[in-house]
Picture 1: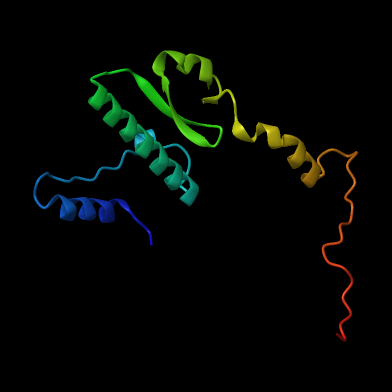
Picture 2: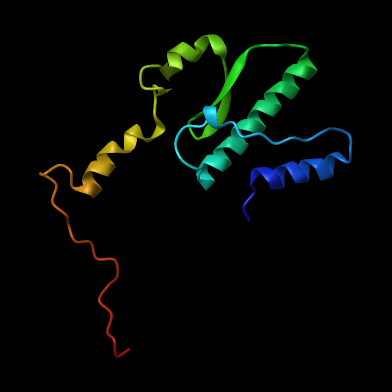
Length: 132
């Protein structure tokens, strides 16, 4: 199913049972690129979940540390805002450490971008006798 803005507003309104008002808004000036993919939506859900957990923990502990949520090593984590400069490449507007950069050699191999790479046939199955 496709959960658009109107569906989510209706769902929150129904679940709230009149306890709060629900309004939807399009924040186009914050969005970059095209329509979010399923991966983008899942990542956003994970980041929000982590952020809410941090807020709940801070509320219980009586602290108000300024943190931001990001992904590291295949998990989400909260980091102090004063460390953000260390983690971001402001010129290119992206994290300094990209999780996929370690995969560049694989990318070059499978895309044959390096002229020295020659594809090698790989036998996936043993020869099968069609009469069997």
